[in-house]
Length: 177
Image (cartoon, rainbow, N blue to C red; front, side, top):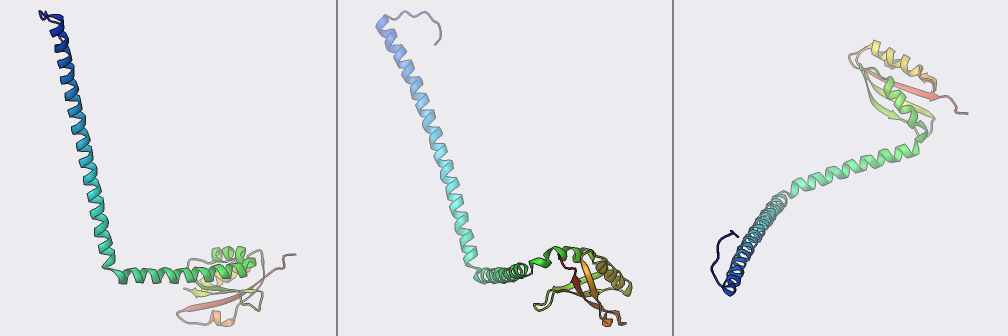
C-alpha cells in the first residue's frame, strides 16, 4: 500500500485496510480458479484426443482381421521353426562349437545350404554351392585344416564339370579324450 496522508478516523482506516486485503484475496482466488479451470480444460482436451485416437486405431485394426490373422500365422510358423532349431541344438550340442568353425571356413565364393548331423552317424554333413572349382578346392582345404577334423570325405561329384558346383562333405571329428 502506498504511503499517504490518511485523515480517516482509526475505525474507518481499519475498515479500508480490510477492504483492500479482501479485494486482493478476491483477485487471487479468481486467478487460481481461472488457472485451475484452464488446467481442467487442457486435461479434458488431452483425454478426448487420446480417447479418439484409441477409438480410431481400434476401428482400423478391426477392419483388418485378415492382416492380423496372416501375421499371427507367420509368427506361429517362425515359432515352429525356432522350436525345431532349439530341439536340434539340444540334441546335437556336441557339434555346436564346431559349427562356427565350419561357417567361418566357407569362402565368399561358396554358400552353405545344409549343415546336418545324421542320427545314426557321428559325422557333420556340409552341403552347398560354390561359384567355381577354385572356391570348392579352397573350401575343402579350409575344412580339412580345421584342428578338430579327423577326416573329410569329398565325393567325386563335387568336382564334376557344370555351371553349378554343388558340393557335399562329411566331416568326422577327432575323439575328445
